[in-house]
Length: 136
Image 1 (cartoon, rainbow, N blue to C red):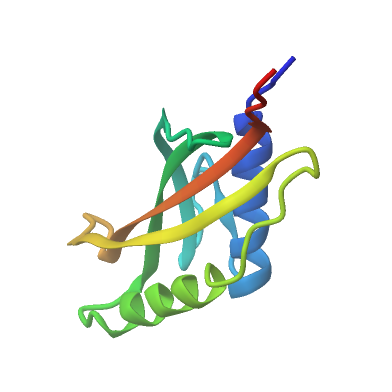
Image 2 (cartoon, rainbow, N blue to C red):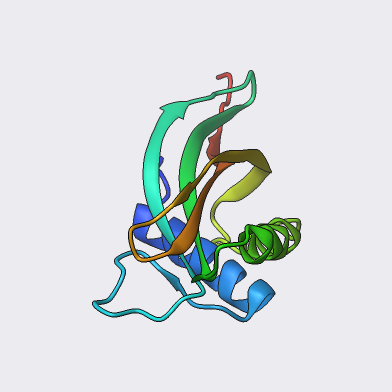
C-alpha cells in the first residue's frame, strides 16, 4: 500500500533545515512574546504532481521572516538571504520517500508589522515521491 508522507515529518524536516542553516528558531506556531529575529512557517497546500513513473505530491510552504525592530529594510534582507542560503541544501526526509525537487518561489511580500518589525513571506515548494508506478 502506498502512503503519502506525513505532513508533521515534512514540517519538522523544514524546521530543522532552517534552524541548522540559519542558527535562528523556526516555529510552526509563534510563542507569545517571541523575540525577533525568527522564522515561522505555514502550510500553503499540496497537489498531485505524478510523473510517468512515480507518485509525487507537490507541497507548498510559506516561510515568514521576522526581522529585528528597525526602520531600515537591511535586517529583513539579511535574514532573507540567510534563509535562501539555508534552503539551498535539501531537507532530510524519511528514507521511504524521495525528495524529487526543492525550490524557492522567491519573496512574495515584505511588510511592516505593527510591532515595528519587518516581515517578509517566502514560498518554497517540495516535490516528494511516495512510490513507483509499475506495469503488470
